[in-house]
Length: 421
Ligand code: EPU
Image (cartoon, rainbow, N blue to C red; front, side, top):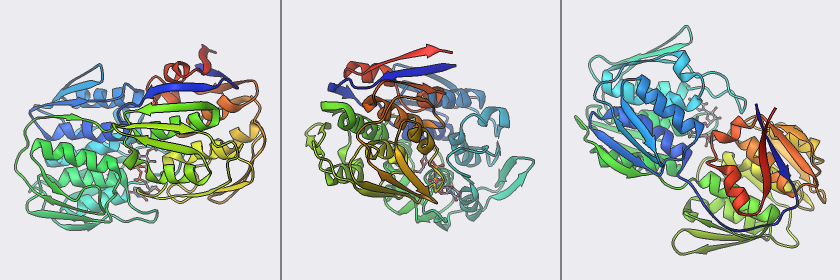
């Protein structure tokens, strides 16, 4: 199994290009199942998750290939069955459910398994599909949804205990594309990735309004054509490199960034005194304050502070003097990075879904274990500023969501390399 060895203390500078969004690419790739015509998706990051989604499309019957960030898919005929062996490796594979139901009138998809960041039920997805007239049965670890007479437009509220659901909104929006009449989704997730999916669906010929706001209106259509689409830049990769630039940088530039998707993070960084300059053409410059202030952040659905940046922010606050507080409201138990950061000398008290972080002068290198994608990013960030060489185990997590992270960090001047063992 691969490990990453990161030597702390190098100063980062220069420019890095941000890749296309993983969390946009996955549902957009699933949405190609809705059309029989060729679809061409550009700006897809080369990650284990996106490659896996391409494999899922092929196993479901589509022709699909990925080359140089472009995925070509044609789903002339597809199966209505996605068994456990196919979906178990990636939770996001649940977003084939909506397109399969819409296209085939039925879908059998195995329930995604547990996840280290929390329970992650899909009750809201199923409630939405039921509201569109589907029969839903959960048995033996499988979900069977069927609507032999077709789906019918309805008014659906997608709000759950922890706010809106991103992939749930995607699933219902994709299912409603062929529903008879008009569907209104209220308390929809307003994440930029939901809006990107709707832009792609509209390019295919769907009639969706309001995506990117909490109210989405979908007028059903009878069929879709093919389309070409470029995925938006990855706001979480951008945010992660912004924090790298602050923890270890002497002025780092990020290209291909949608700063309007990063407002809450930029506000938090500026609130601590760091400099974030927005340039024309999607470029951002970040540099660290010499006297940063402790801060408080609470994760929330978009446009609030993203849960996918919480672990990285935790890493930043470990060496920000004073007491910072992070409250996680989206996945209340998403703190697997905390014990690992503590192994590096961080002073963090965890109480329920709140982390109270007392900044220390410097972390020290230690062998640590990545538990999930964003936790592994947090450990890399912490290691960049730590004294000594940090050994990060279970590196495969980071390859799920960061394209060429080692090369990108190395191009900025970081010292890191992979070893087997
Ligand atoms: N929830 C329910 N019922 C449901 C669905 C969700 O109670 O039916 C709860 C979840 O347990 C959670 C909250 O609602 O407490 C939000 O979950 P959501 O459904 O929005 O998460 P998701 O759509 O499964 C996507 C991203 C995650 C990101 C979350 C929140 C993708 C592929 N995944 O997951 O990304 O954390 O939205 O923004 O888009 C990551 O990239 O590292 C990652 C985990």
